[in-house]
Length: 262
Image 1 (cartoon, helix red, strand yellow):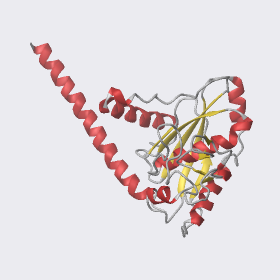
Image 2 (cartoon, rainbow, N blue to C red):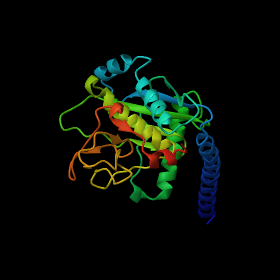
Image 3 (cartoon, rainbow, N blue to C red):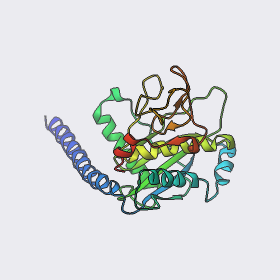
């Protein structure tokens, strides 16, 4: 009987500790959301490359990434901010962080329930803490972890994601010179997720009309020439959409701008 009571007490203590951690994280998240909604000064963004397959070719690709590798992302945000008459520039200060050798924890399936998702969220934050020089809850500091893989025939990459809670993004990308520009589109997409932007595509992957269209008033409507970045594609017909070749072919639409407080 005593053993049973001890086990029950242990479970209650464990649940209490988890609840305290969740409340603490929720408080930090509330502060983050309020500070990242303030564009009076630049947002700090650090991109950490990760060797996703452990291959020497991937390691060499990461080593070749120069200090200006992601400069077009900063330029994209600056130009789009000007289109919405944002008064303060630069919008973001972007830098490359150290290479990370370990992999982040895989997110659970939604069917596993909220408790599993909460535990994963805490384990992801711990992984950030273990692999960077700060806790990962810094106000106005977004961390994007780009996990590079060697391209293989018919290979599908794991789903990328950006979390507003914790300002953490994880991007799966190909370690391929020819796909660098498209990788940056995905990075910018997930970065916007961390700032509160939502996806603007249908279940079938087609851009959602009208907020998923860069030019919803264009006549004729098709083909679109630019992609609303949170739609991820631009429609060339009612049934076909294409991934933009680079950020030069992408825009931030009015709905996305409102979501990130522009």
